[in-house]
Length: 431
Image 1 (cartoon, rainbow, N blue to C red):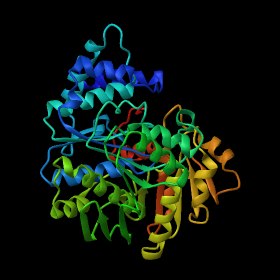
Image 2 (cartoon, helix red, strand yellow):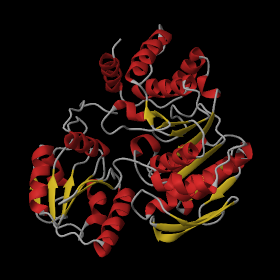
Image 3 (cartoon, rainbow, N blue to C red):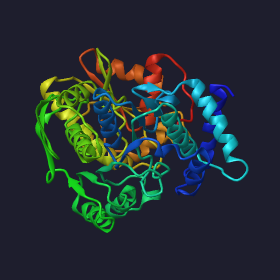
Image 4 (cartoon, rainbow, N blue to C red):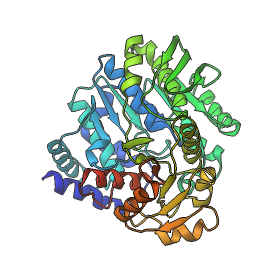
């Protein structure tokens, strides 16, 4: 099997959609010989911030001298982004070999989904690579997510807000219950900025499982106006003058969660020096989240796709406009059909001068015309340009060299934009 045929096979599995549950992944892990038990793990869930927190934790551990696996989703451009060891993507030959191995093991009775295949591949690759620690980002929810077959050193729930309601429930409490499903008996859990209803739900689950709880602004805290300089206190750590490479004030919460997660894992022998903390935060990379990819005009990519993430983007735009004013600000917006379009753009009202509506090359994507209809009356100077390349050309023209083009609304759209900048093709199905 070649790499291209392996990825094509995996992408074809997406037609089966999402099937939450642990029976298939548990059986597949048994057939593989339980690779996820051969190394220590950290497990991170949350509506927003879980990927950034995972990237930070992995960066700190790597600088501290550990061999670190990082499993995240979705990828932006290249499938192999999902599975990394010490910052290096899984090799194409390994993807092909593991896909073939998993196909054989699944016969005759297992039919894993795309995400279950990918998760099994990650767990086996980390074992084959001899990682010391694997940092795992939950794909969806937590309780029935395929990653939830590990017993980690510590886990985290970064935030709870409304997203994926068709799978996780329509209230913050119901979503919190699903995400609390990653809490294991006696395993410490780190909690980020949560509303009281979500907090009460998770606290109850943790109490039932006798899991120690460490909560932001109670057991650990961060102080500072932005990632350029902030401090952290909690779980045996105290740092001043920290700098994080990831933009946005919301990243201070994520950095605090990452530090608290490592603090919670410290009793199990995880040691991270002050030098590693400073260097890891200073050099961490997490693509597609407030990522500047070009100048004159400034091109900003942000994969925000729910109202809470749009609020963080709006906060960034407001504060960047004060320190580095951009005029005009052009929004390139594309969203999936099942997202809350109107609530998403509400925080951005008054912050943008022109809007270019476009669409990702995916069946789930709302068309530019559908976006225009659903957002009628909310945004100024709206242009409908279905083609991303044409949308970017128009946005650059509207922005002028001194302006800002912000591409947002969907990680899939951001991934296509990154591929467009690299001048490479992109499969229409990316998970």
